[in-house]
Image 1: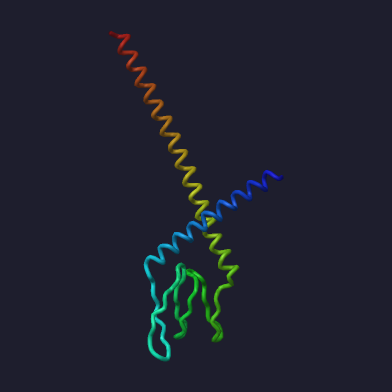
Image 2: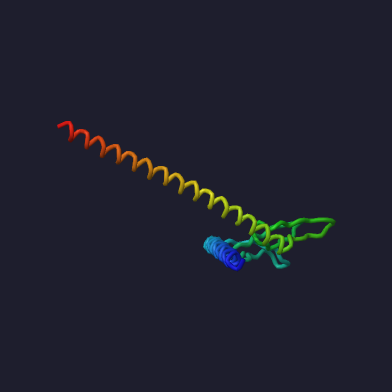
Length: 138
């Protein structure tokens, strides 16, 4: 029971590290692009720097800064953003699904490598046998 807990905890820590690395890489990429948004004020238009991983959306003339891929809705004149818990849960599910696909692809690649190793070994054995037969025939 304790071993299963430790393994589960290790897997969770690995997923967290992968998620943080991915988010950091995306943030770094976003910050390198230097995205800017234009905001209208009473004194005119001004540029606002959009932080990494964020996006500016406009709903009925109102600009809102939200995380990328966050769901924003408008009902009865009220603009609502997706609950942060639901947003993070959805993002973790997406990352988990991608992680599962990567693992299955890795397993397929391992199987293909094993098959290739067996083919090479068979060819090498056949080559040795043919060489030995030629020596015996001389």
